[in-house]
Image 1 (cartoon, rainbow, N blue to C red):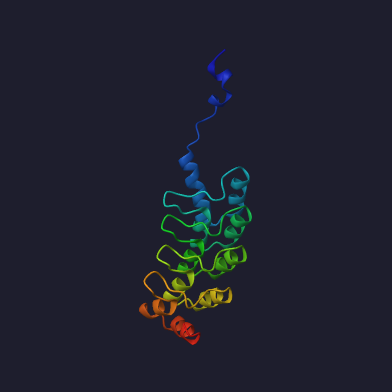
Image 2 (tube, helix red, strand yellow):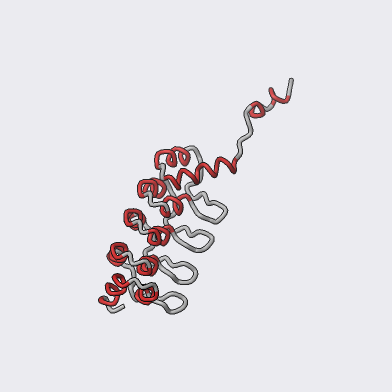
Length: 176
């Protein structure tokens, strides 16, 4: 008997797990919901994270893929899982301006008040970049316009500092 007979897996090519993981992360970046579902159903963890702690959901959110976000959360991805910088998928989508992703995350349990370690919320980020539709969406889902980050800066203050006049006016009208 040979080793091959005793160990049938030795006849199969070695799998480069790092390359495979990279392919899965690329699926999330491209928003390939069908393939993401297939690999998760085959055993890939739905909260798989890369070297920066970005989950599949963070990557899909940051790249604006609402269908992939829906699929990932429905298959067990945590909508509040932070990356190594303490950022949430909701904050990533607010930064990039993806309202459909934000709607999807909020509908599936994302914490509208989930803040990064410096206390910044998705509302503050949306306000800074003058994303009025996202500010309105977050407010409609209970975001606190009076919340302040670790430096005492509110969403309205952040908007003012960045010259984001529309969101600053919207928040000031709320007394923020």
